[in-house]
Length: 296
Image 1 (cartoon, rainbow, N blue to C red):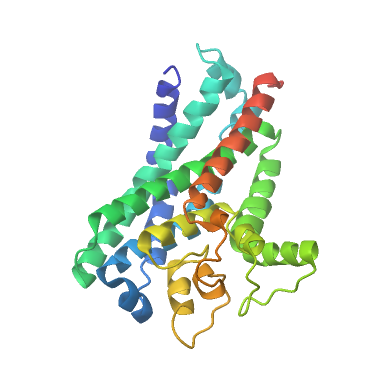
Image 2 (cartoon, rainbow, N blue to C red):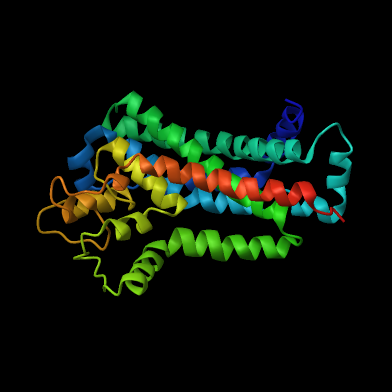
């Protein structure tokens, strides 16, 4: 574990920085969103749903803002050559930065989510602790996936501005904010079938596309753990969609497919496969490029 001292320094640098704690302060403010429908569906477990909402919205922003200069910034100012002067391989450097940055964001995030949890317990009572730990574990996996994407792009690109633009437009805007619209457009272009989200076709390909983004995969798994429904949307939107006489522009398997007709690849556990793929594939590409690239 030659990479461990580097990971420790990366984590310490983030935990002692003001920026990560400012984002942590925003997390409780954004996360605490109780609704009557969610209370009826989840009861005291509504507090667990707060974790999903805050993580899916703010963790991508935190990963980009705090990690985009991880490799490319040190390459530009020459510090990367100093780091590689230590008994570390380039793979050690990538792994150390990935682990360290993930821990450095996770610690303030867990503190912030802990505050929301305390408020939830006071207001709504105790929740299922095993379910809470399961959602929290998937949330940490989601964070590690996002950091892996950002660190990988930082290792491949040659300029910090290129990294920032790629991640802001590609990861944050396309894959996080607009992915449902992009997915339905791609489906319509590929199949020639128009899509109305209030009455979508019962086609597994459309629903698979909808959960191919990191946040879509994360929401799918955490909705499974919360038992709110099979969907890549936020749990509160899924709960609203499942209410009689209510229509929301989200894709929910339970309201579209008849019993016994759901394709096997739409099982919620597939979201874990998607998260692992997002975390490992960019990292493998980055390692290949970084290990053979010029650091000048």
